[in-house]
Image (tube, rainbow, N blue to C red; front, top):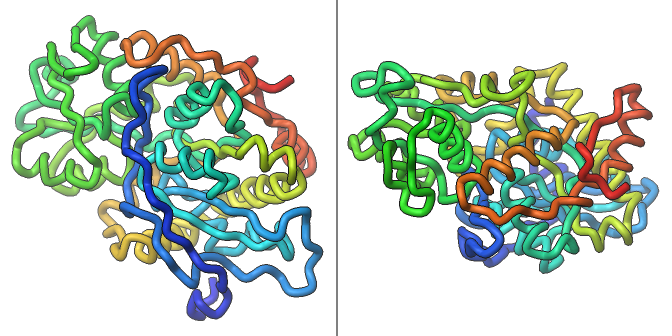
Length: 378
């Protein structure tokens, strides 16, 4: 990777978005985002590689892409830094926007402030449901895994010891909150989903302050995504359970790619180019893991002013798998878990996936097509 300054080859600017409230009302459901990173989008003249001069322009002059400064959004972090998306887009310029909460990203998509975004399954499902299925489509997978139950080993030595303890999740109704509530139910224990009180006390705590809460002793553990899980381990916590072990083939969706239905209809060639960049980026990450990890950490430093130390970065990176498959069946199961917890009314998810362009790109690359688990547009 070139050591030249990022500004030498990036020229577009990052505009500031006004974030919406961190949690959507529990009307259709309390599914919200999981994330770790900057609080707000930041203006940055080095936000994206310059469009290739003389290259063929697609049907749009630009495409506005949103993502989190989070390792589970590695496809976006690495693909944008390495210029792999811009290469596929030619003269169509990329404009980047970063978010720290899924509801804010959905709000931006609804407002037309972004066209395509990397986001967790819960806010995508909630956004789709609240719009009556009119605002977005999930068009690809991006990452699996990277979620763990980490605990204070002095207080919790076995899964049975979790009963009666205080366990943090990032947000009421978010992906990890639903996963913990479902796991608690599987143990035969009872917790009131709204208050978090019961056989286990579920404490909703922002990922950014969870390590301090752990150090102060106000929580005994946490069911959290990376890199928060590895931050807690660096503070002396132990991994009690990796959520991947609860899923078939140890895979479950943590990040998908969504697109505005309006943009998809108007600019399918641009969406196809972004998906081609995504597929090629995932292949590049798999073939160049060490450089990809360094790229992702460089981006985190640029976006949050703080890189992750090796004792956090290395285990966090190892637990996340980039992939193209949206793992639709697991997203549907996560939604059913939220329904069972009383956080979501039974959602109508028919048509939430449109994998037509992804399958086209996968065939071009000699890769197998993927399933929408009966929730596709066809």
